[in-house]
Image (cartoon, rainbow, N blue to C red):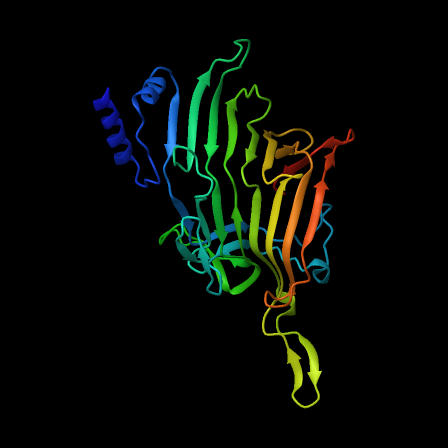
Amino acid sequence: MKKFTKLALVSSLAISANAMAMQAMDDASLGATTGQDGINIGIGISRITIDKLFVHDNDGLSTKDATGTVIPTTALGGTGNAGAISIKGAKNSETITLTNGGTIDRKDQGIFIGANYQSLLATGNLADLQIDSDAGSGSGNTAFINIAAQVSGLEIHIGEIGVTASGANDPAVNIRRGGNDSNYNAILSGLSVKTGKMTANIQLGAAPQGAMIKLDSVMQGGLEIKNLGILDNSTNGAVVAVHPTAGPISTTGPGEIFIESIKVADANSTNLTMKASVSVFGESAANKGFVRIVSTNDKIDNYVKGIHLGSRTAGSIGDVEVQGLQTFYGASYDKGSMISISGH
């Protein structure tokens, strides 16, 4: 059995290109694992980085409303030309200290996703999955796949979010389309998100749990968003005063609402309960289909620290604290919220 343990460990290390941590199983654990059917997957990735990300809107903002009536350009400014939401490295350098003690620069990548070393899974993996196939009740099409997922706490750092004109793809060169840097406006100067451990259950097929994805877990340490900057490029270069001798005084960059930190937790707690269902609805007489997210959370507390108006170097107006926030949805005023997402 000890030889089998060593073989399992060596195989795991050989398969995993990133060893954030495929840990050796002891004999008891191996016996429990091999004594039942199903598939266990440990995802040993220590970090994920993305240079740039684009979400293309191929027909832009329509020049007509739903009835076909032409919307004046002066009203909304729509041209029907393709644009894209863009995420890339921040314009300015900013050193970020990671939870493992290392550092990165916000300008070096658009998105950084790594393990929150203050909230790791016991296995040390970024995520663990247990996959089983079940015939269901046997009456009709009741078969399904069940995927139980445990996800490590994460730290996510985003460089800069903006909007750009969509580029043109040359299939003879590569599959990239990208954007037009000469037609680009930053919207968010960056943000960082830190989460605790989470669990989710995914069912594909009949989904007897009532939804494709069920979240019912407690995020240890709650949710925190740091260094969120919302930009207003319409004021870039705007005249804000006139000096009697020097003349007009203009802004040197876009205006910014900068928030140092946003923390969210259950009421009177440091943790955040996650209870939600995600379902995908197909085409019907009413619409072409959509994704629905139903959250059934109880009251939460929210603490917003360091609100700076105008620029991040401006003086803070202070902190905002919200205790016992509760949302409701539907005619029966159920606790939580319902969000539907679809294309148009």
